[in-house]
Length: 570
Image (tube, rainbow, N blue to C red; front, side, top):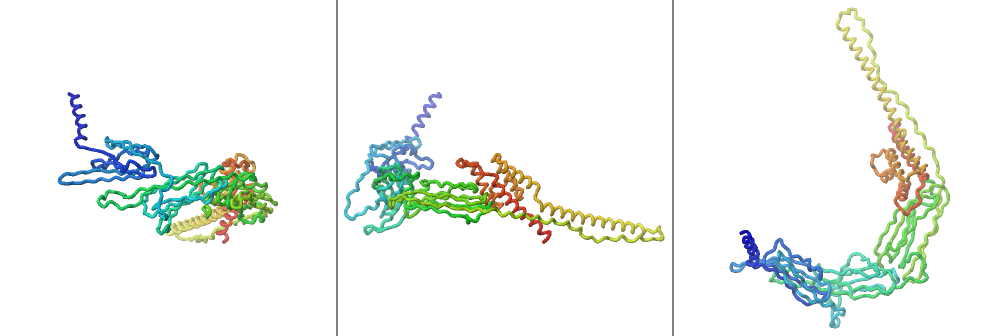
């Protein structure tokens, strides 16, 4: 009995789709096309589909899905209603030859496979009448066809059209073997009259850097778009009506020469122009011990990216502590392509008096316009450091204790002799005298305590805080001993927190900023760089930090003492 019921149920389920007559079919607009062209695949279900969509993943093996559109329609005629849903998918073949559109599945229903013949694209343009211009065409050009290895090549690609286009256009990615390709900004758009017809022009530019000598090929680029046609007036669901167009540019061959044999430098720099300059934050000949000055080196090369530029090594001189920042690099667009820029800033702190010399800096490069080797040089720089002028820190005047506030003593009334001791007024006057005496004593005690408290507060505020002194002594001991460098930052943070009366938890960088000392910021940056930069193998000289720490401490303690004395003597 159970088997008969299951068999009946299975037959019923199989019969339902057949009884309803559900279908799911596929069709194409053509079966033979070029690889550059697009085929339109239409999938139709004979009912309205609101939640189900066909699985298009089988198409991705041989096709690129350019676009897809879904539409549902319903018609009623003489009491009979018909509805269907269409999916219109535009496909671009990935290869030439015999290609099959595989079955597409929707809700258990599958379409039949469709065979296509894909022809290879023609490399020669079709013959046309003299003076005729295609509605859409593309051309590529370069500024140089013979270059040196790693020299910049400017490749310009222009797409011109005299018919309006939809916004579904695509351009193939430019990839070249043994070369680095970099896009130069966003595409530009303009219009121009060509053979009496106005054309819209899209222009793209690329910088190409060949990495080996020999010959390289800039491949043909493919541009696909949909040219606008009129919509079907009898089919409001026709979507975008237009003709799919695909065009290609011509290949370009470039001859790449090796570097000239007379070049023996470390970094090969074929460029149009090279600039090397420096700026100082002050006069390098007017420094005293403890002062700091910043030197900024700028290297600009027209025709190369910053990744091709040589690194600028910071100078190190005994008696001058150097604290170099991280180099700042950028690529800037110029009239000739890319200009690579690298900037290095170094802070120098004078620790010993004397005359110092920064060595000359030279960079060799190859001038591609004259074909000559050139050298850009910064001359040797002299730095004069004078002895520090020691001015004794004036001892603040100790505030004198303030005299207690004058209080008007309340004279004790003279004893009143009453002949008649039995009168009740005698007790009243005695009680009143005792109360007035007590009030006078309380007033005198309050005035004395207030004066004493103000004197103690002024003394405590005019002297360094005990915690600050202890933290400063611990920091000095560390600088003198030069022990574990990881302890310098916690000790510096503890001392600055007491000195600046700052809340706990503020980072050391922010405390150095609040201290207002460029030297303090520079020495802490050098400390961090020595810990976490593997290329910097010279540990900082912590003993040379002591003059900077003393200068910061004296400046802040003097400022605090002056602020304290103002209300006392102002």
